[in-house]
Image (cartoon, rainbow, N blue to C red):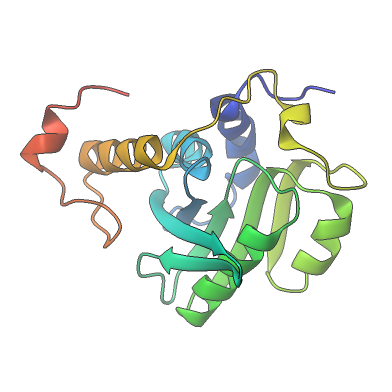
Length: 183
């Protein structure tokens, strides 16, 4: 079963589903792959994009970096969910940081994971809801990975183009970003 041509296509298909959310909502991309989905959603919805940088170790998943979200509607975005551990960590982090409302928006979320994530957030929006977790590549024609370096590049470039300023991206107008070209 293939639903999406690639990660960007997943963002394009997700965008109309988020059209009713306030435009001052902040998309929080789970890095690195979530940034490609979030930027495509932002292009259509005009929502600001921030990033949740995560680390994985023996203690599980921790959020290492997160922009300020206090009082905002936060939309947690990634290329999909398999186990839900990264999404759970980001939901907990944005709640602790004072988000007013937390929406999880994923192209793919297994029903078994959605059941317990629904207890942690205010709303879940998804396209594919398989019964059980399985590899995300099952849902994509081209599931080319995005590494951390490329994820940071995409985030920085989008921030520069749109004038976003959060603690997770360089200042708008940074001359080094102007030289990067279009993405």
